[in-house]
Image (cartoon, rainbow, N blue to C red):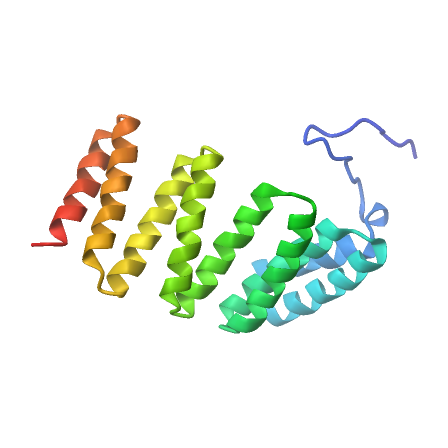
Length: 195
């Protein structure tokens, strides 16, 4: 069998068949398949196996990815402390690698954990950091999503003024992109809070 040594369009080497994948990669893919089938217990076992394999292979990126999938499973099962532990492990790896975009994804997951845990102050603090992160990385959609979630959290905490500020900021973002309908919608949302 002749090997194709040219990189794929993504820049990563193409893997043609199961025999070329490491056991850790196979375990990770099996975990993803279980997740897609809503079999979270089996997915968790597969991701744990993947972590062991990635550790043996000294593949930190693989460990971080498997940790984040386990954090998602823990969040789904409302095991918030364990979800945060997996996030911390992934965060440590990505911080060492200076992987900005992965760190943002981890922060998003942590914010969701605190939101579901009803620790709104911690969630709001993380979403506030995410707004700054998205501004730096020039991601207006991420900024808008974070502000909208912050507004929802402020409303759960009965802080209408802060929620209104979030909506006004969203309106301003849409206005700068000439999204007139969305601008008016969010401006109205901010005004409706005080009717």
